[in-house]
Image (cartoon, rainbow, N blue to C red; front, side, top):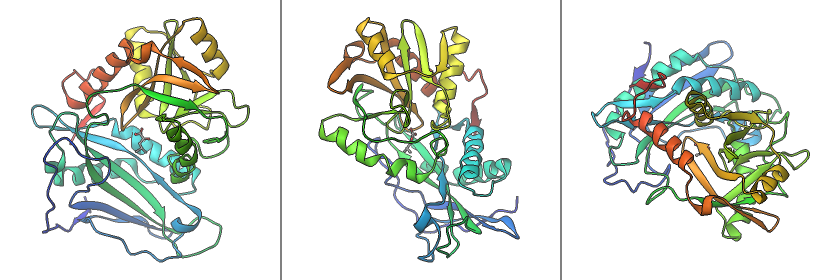
Length: 353
Ligand code: COI
């Protein structure tokens, strides 16, 4: 390929244990590529990880024209490095970019660049239990202009961060507040895109939940404030009377890759699963009838995060006595097993670096 590599002679110390805070440590190199209208995406390069110099008028700083992705590289027992469905992340990167009026990338080429970067940094993929190398591709509008219009220039970068197990001391079900005041996203908005503003606009609701000693929020739709959308920065699943239900992708919900994988696994296992609208009233009713069996969030960072309790306007729903459910556990074990190469990858989901 045409990629140039400038090696860093200054090597940082790698984490020495599995206690690695999420997204605080970065590797020695990063990937950078530029976009200009007349040249398209060009000059793919791997360079030492270092601060950027950007014009203060760069459009990213003003109107937030940016998208990102998140995936993980895992070290297997026999010392291989695996990515989990990275093609889906690159497909979604372009979906998000389209929503933010950012020009698309060549997914196959970016896959090659990613693999090349991770190969160069392979010693940074930690081998401690529950750890991985988090891969963060992102694109920013760089044109120095305050015009309210798409940037004419962009940078795509990929940075890598070794991360520890999401839950120290095993998976713990969390307590969640059903958010009535704030909205994460509305149909027609940017909810289906992985873009910065979706995350920073959630902090106020998060803070309210923290104040009540709860871990995060359950988001309802922005129009009727009835239909369940996501939990924190994750997709949400419920097991109700033997059937697994997750909100249908309505335009305001992120097309999660863990979400997609869980639906596919349940279908293979012959467990009823449906993508449909589900209201908070329906959920509460199921709870009162003793039919709300399990609830869990899904995402790349945590894989599966069981919900032990929901607080809806002071009404508490305790799910599975606050313990992780057997299906949640089985899904977690299967997906993390495939990711780490200890469970057979029957679906061709992993890509060796
Ligand atoms: C997820 O992986 O579940 C996320 O949404 C990741 C977060 C760090 C943006």
